[in-house]
Amino acid sequence: MIQVLNSLPMYIICGLIILFVAAVCIIFMIRAYRAGKSIGMDEKVLKRAVTSSVTFSILPSVGILLGVIALSGSLGTPWPWLRLSVIGALHYETQVAQGAAEQVGLSSLSAAQMTPSAFTTIALLMSICIMWGMILSVLFNKAYLKRLGSGKKKDGTGAGEAADTVKDKKKQSFGDAAMIAMFIGLVSAYIGSYIGGFVSGKGRFTFRGDLTPIIVAAVAAAVMAVFTYLSEKKHMVWLESFSIAGSMLIGMLAAILFG
Amino acid sequence: MERSKQDQFESYNARTHLLGRICSVVTLVLLVGAPFLIGTYLGGMPEMPAVLKGFLAVGIVWTVSSIVEFLVYTPMLGAGGGYLAFITGNLINMKIPCAMNAREIAGTSSGTPENEIISTLSIAASSLVTIVVLAAGVLLLVPLQPLLQSPVLQPAFENVVPALFGAMSYMYYRKNLKLALFPLVFMSVLFILVPSLISQTSIMIIPAGALTIALAYMIWKKHGTILSKDIGR
Image 1 (cartoon, rainbow over the protein chains, first blue to last red):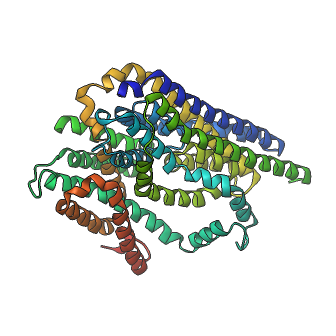
Image 2: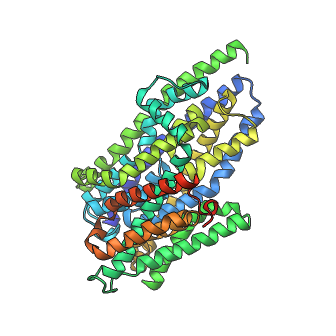
């Protein structure tokens, strides 16, 4: 199955979509550059904006590439390549892929159990779950920016979205807290499932289940702690770009050593 | 700004919205269409009931976070940058800091035409870098494929999810220890007592998330924050 997922037609399908997105970026870039010149902006400033963004993005992009490698073992290379080039984010893709794998009846996200329809189901779910930012942009970007631009009281225009914005403004700080809480709940559910799997996976309270996920999670967390320490206390800020992918890869390595 | 230049910029902006919408819709169609196209090639179509169940389980969380991202980041990114960023993704880990950085270098402020231009240039450049780096990397990966598929490495790839949650647990727990303790213990006990739920962890996210948000609300109401250091545990 993994051979098929890595076959040329898969590369072509995914590559063409990526090519389209690259073309979109180039078009937007040229238009913005020209418009900037025509409203009298200094070309030097425009060029610096581009070069600084290019240099800024190289390291995080390598981090994202590590994500492609992390996912390539179970989903093949082309699909993770597409997903992480277009709207993806590693933590998102992995979770959704895992959730989808559970729904199609795979016990874990692995190439050994993959079937064609399991793969397409996972792929479709990965696409659907993340498209809302784009849909919201299509529907509301213009109205939202216009209202922000006017900077006045937001009454009327775009009923549902207006209500959301008002609510968001009022409870900004709890909104942040709730987002963090949601992720803590999500992480806790998974970590809890590894603990439960070890303790009761092979019969309740037998402690004979799979210990590997717990070890992997613990190693990844420890490596993450080291990365955080280095980037915050030792001011190696560039490390931040690698922290998630790097911790994951080292955690995964632990599975080989201890598994 | 002179009148004519302002008009010019406004027509640029109007076209940005049109172009941004068209490109977003086309990308959407391509992304949602790709699994079906792949399905005809592989000989297996997506199972809709599983997609629906999966969406209810994992999708809801991401839908909420997408709405928040849209509301928070759109004002920072402007029109062109906003459309591009939501097409190309990796917002928190790359696009947002990248655009902020470019903005600082250019010295523009929110909501101005200059800022709109700079942020579009920045997001476009950043996206192109990612595309190029990934394409080059993937090309290099092709000869490594037999190695990546070797049986020795399979345990690693089977544990990509625990690795992710391990890394994320440190990220989220360290600042919110007090809040994290209860859901972690509760979920562990639940899975220990009812091991059959383990295969449905993605659905168990919903009660776990609801529980944690409820707890967070209680802490937040009392202290105005959920950060452990500010509560003084």
